[in-house]
Length: 344
Ligand code: IPM
Ligand code: MN
Image (tube, rainbow, N blue to C red):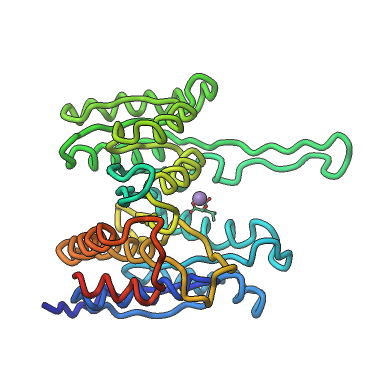
């Protein structure tokens, strides 16, 4: 069944393998029967080097008018010095997260056969607009022997609470109804205290959800040794960044990890992207794994109201992975996309 919609998706293929994996993701979306109106945007390292632009205000305003954004990956080759450090991260990726109020970064992890944690099935809810990413801080006496650099962690009650509420809501809808707050309350006694109090308060609204707490260092051990203990994890921006790379590694590899940067209030588009980067070393070789991008596109379908099509994509990926465990020789980017289409 084909559903023609007037939903408009902005596609930022980006750099390196980004355009290759988004092409497969869009192929699968079309094959799942959802016809979206797509518009390509040239943004990223190559675009910056060609134009000097990172994210012009007019482009940001244009993006606000779309129903969703699908992003491949942006960034220069590792070791390249042409693009200043942090320029694309702060000026493009974080700017989009902050300006579009994408306050939830949802990262689901479903174990891949053959992976260290083949049976894991959990979701990390990473706060996406605050913490150490907020940009608070600066230098004093830079370049002198007495220089000082500070980088504070910004935690607002409102920002923390809305992220927690999203996580509780998600946990309440899952069979295990279990939520783990991950922080470092024994050392970060201000931020951690706010998170913990807010979590206790919101928990009162969700009596069916069991709320647990782990320190982030212990959570790293548990993720490796007993990943099955997790159902939904909620954590701050930086802990979530680090934990989701670890989670990706245990669940099959970063090539499988998808993410949804959500504006749950729907005051603008949400953004969907694989967790991996531009991987210039394999760009153009046809060997990039498109499954993280395809999964991200499925998260986008779900967000856009095509839950049934999204479910079919996730199922097709599971069927494919049962036949092709992690670590086995990988056919090619396009062949994997085709294989998912055949299994829809
Ligand atoms: C991620 C990435 C980004 C982050 C970088 C590229 C800004 O690592 O999406 O996890 O730190 O959030
Ligand atoms: Mn990261």
